[in-house]
Length: 294
Image 1 (cartoon, rainbow, N blue to C red):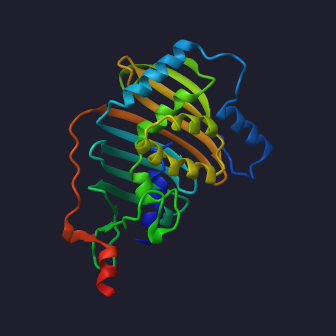
Image 2 (cartoon, helix red, strand yellow):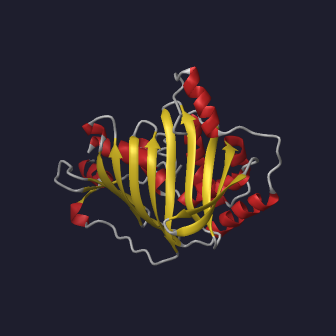
Image 3 (cartoon, rainbow, N blue to C red):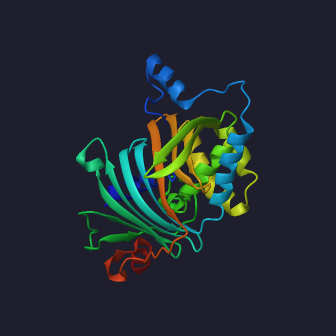
């Protein structure tokens, strides 16, 4: 179970979470850096078409009305390799269930796992793995956002990432100063308009400063995590349907730990989501066990 927390925390950075297909580490070659610059995009003097900005802003505003959603995420994560997830989330009260597959550089770095956030508690389970007591699930210590087990600062802590709303990432695209309309495209049978743009960390922070306290707190740890990876900007793509809903969202950047290239598909919105905690008898609670030993 030792690798489970680390892999799950990394995979949860999405939703972040959400390093181009040509992205590279800080030791990459000049050619790779050139490709990455193209993938991440460059600022131009051309003013943003007001209709493009308005379309993206409408989608961002529509995100704020969402009470629940189902989505999938796939792509490359720094140090984690290829990740595929399927998730359901209830916004208020906050609850989340995510099943994921991670394909790393070795068998030890690959596997399938599930994460649940229920009533403020985060539970992890890895396929084919049990705790020393034969339990299938482990309950993560509740040490607060931005903290990891033991209380050490951890912007990629499992709790912090489990509490992320993937809609936050797509909403940040409205801060872009170089939005472009790519064209009309069909995503999973739905007609959409494809937009692209570049968003810097400074623009994301400026956008975040205008949000409510809860959103600022939720995203601050994630932004610190991006900064820790050496990220300074993202190339973003958004596909918006006729109802102003974000249908698909992609974000890419170069990091010091390798490429980040994630695509999220939003499958449905505002439909009932029921997420339950695992059976108590099949859960290991490290904090409770520590209390017994004290």
